[in-house]
View 1 (tube, one colour):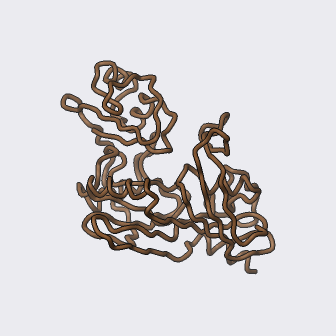
View 2: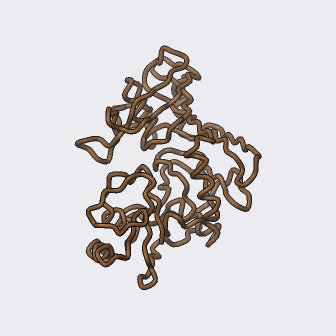
View 3: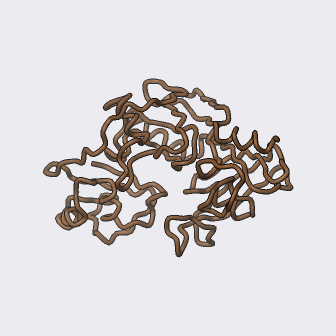
Amino acid sequence: MKFIVDEYSEGMRIDLYLANYMQDFSRSKIQKMIKEGFVKINDNNAKSSCILKENDNINIDISEIRESTVVKPENIPLDVVWEDDNMAVINKPSGMLTHPAGVENSGTLVNALLFKYGENLSDINGSLRRGIVHRLDRNTSGLIMIAKNNLTHEFLVNEMKNKNFTKKYLAIVRGNIERDDLIIDSPLGRHLSQPHKQAVRADGKESLSIVKVLKRYKEATLIEVTLVTGRTHQIRVHMASIGHPVYNDTLYGFGKMKIKTEEQVLQSYKLEFTKPFTDERIFLEIPPDEKINKVLNYLNQ
């Protein structure tokens, strides 16, 4: 069993990380596996107290260990925007978890992918994240890439590392942004007192967002954000840091609003990438989702 640590899990102890993704095993059982040398990190024997970094490679010898099979296929409709033999691009709805986490192991994108594609999904990141190359927050909708095999998964990860793809988001934020275009270059890291949040930190990771104003309203602005980097909650934290939190993003300080939606009004709506193992560039765009249209209709009144 193999895992590649993503940015969402950086800073976790390895035993806690594995306990989250190997739910058939207790934390004490996982610690025993680590102690007995079944678990390696970057080809070295792991210790339970090891703190993970992004892109760490975890390998578990499962020759005598049963892999968790908690994720079950579920017949959940999927909006497949584009696909070939190696990958697919799905329009994930707002409210859906990308993959099981904690006690939530049903109704996720992975459950739906297993029903549609069966074993034709990459397993580099373990059984709980079959096919998942990158994530979207539960309440962020839009385009997400899925790998149907491990070679494609590695290809897409390398494309992202080399910034050879473009991902653009639509968002509605509070207040009027005066400039038509701006760049937010603020490093991000875990919030010191609230670890479920991210924050601008001098010792954080480089984080770069390019913001373009599409339309201004009396008390809000419709924007397009191009992610140069892809940090956890990057758009939400960056916009809040300049006083323009994403509409209805209660985690990052939007506050009360006159029209209700499911949390942040944010959508991954444009994607450009290289078709795996070719030189062909793929350009995808989807229309604003129901949540964005609901708020725009209110603002246009």
